[in-house]
Image (cartoon, rainbow, N blue to C red):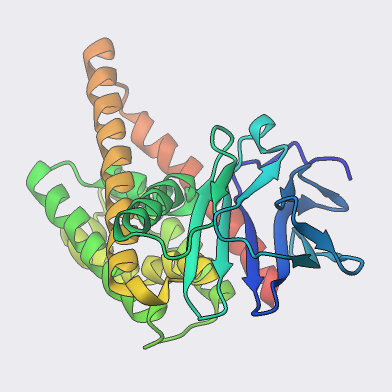
Length: 314
């Protein structure tokens, strides 16, 4: 099929389930728009032979293909990759499930489109994989970044900003852990819709403040950041649940995924603060309409997301 040219930031997902008989079943999900999909394909080792015709379908803007292979000698020590990945801007999250129930997770990128299947990944490998996954996930999560941007526009005090970002971090860390470990569960689609709605709310608070009607978000921004941070944590958990946690290193993987999310968030905050400082230096006195105009833009984008996400499950 023809590769999809738009929205290449969406990651693909490859799961390989290895059975005792060296039979390997694969599930490959890749972004799609209409009947078009990205032109990337899983590449298994030479010892893997297809044993039946793949089953493929497109659903929820994703192309899914299920296939079975006989891989005499297994996958351990062999290389698995994604053909065509080097010419895209997307990533692929690969997960290997072994017969003993242990797992291996790898993140494939255009510059590193292959990985070697190991018997048991080291603690360092697990930590590095989930750190990178958390970092890349937050920086590709436009809704989370827009929420943080709205908070940065609304909160002008450095001390209060630190409290606000800390509250957001603590809140989404709580629900991320609780949801990923199975203590609480919410349908992902409504959660994503409410996350978009939370951005609309903060954007409207910026506009109200510019009109001399400061709301709760400006008076107690850490309260709003904590409340909506709980929701955003469920959003992070949805991505992490899809990839899964290695049974032998659950706390380590969860910790470093969260660390990666925080590093990505701090990177974004630092970049925005530098951009604001640079703008003030170059413009001397930036126009007063810039924050309001930005808030309207954020609100319109988030409103569109809200409607789109509600329609998807209504």
